[in-house]
Image (cartoon, rainbow, N blue to C red; front, side, top):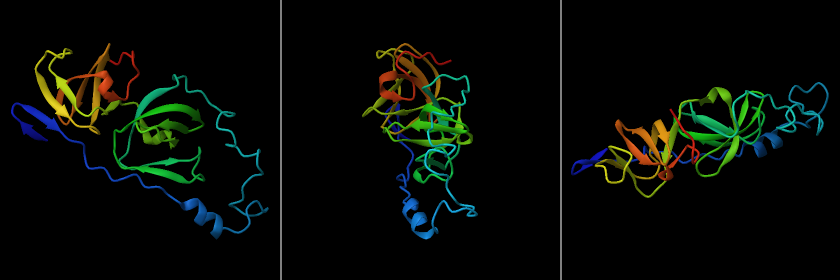
Length: 197
């Protein structure tokens, strides 16, 4: 955090670029013929797999879909399907990053990130803690939910903040120890008219 006059400037944490895993090709080449009886790694015939259709075996948690959550760990794998046998498509290395849960299958959640990437994450890697990421060129945090209020801080794109509350067009957030009100349109991690307490 750097100071510019009386207003703090928040910068995003250095983030390792997401890693695309190309494991599937290696696994398929290295494995003997799949589907043979007695092979512990054998796959079921197409259409008979437990997770062949992520929506056919939905177990409702009773929570609304879609909804927002955040990453619980500092390393989270996003897979192409709901299970460990599916290849890892992205590795997130940023705890508290907000994601939108758009579907559920058993213990797996289909999520979307702020860039639009979609994949499956195990529910143990998700938290109900509400966070947001700044997406505007500059997000100003104000002392009160009013653009005429004094500015507390300015955040560049990519800053992850904890949501304290949201009502109307404003969210009260805590970013890097700085607490203030940000226009909701400058954040990703809440729905347009969602009230967060």
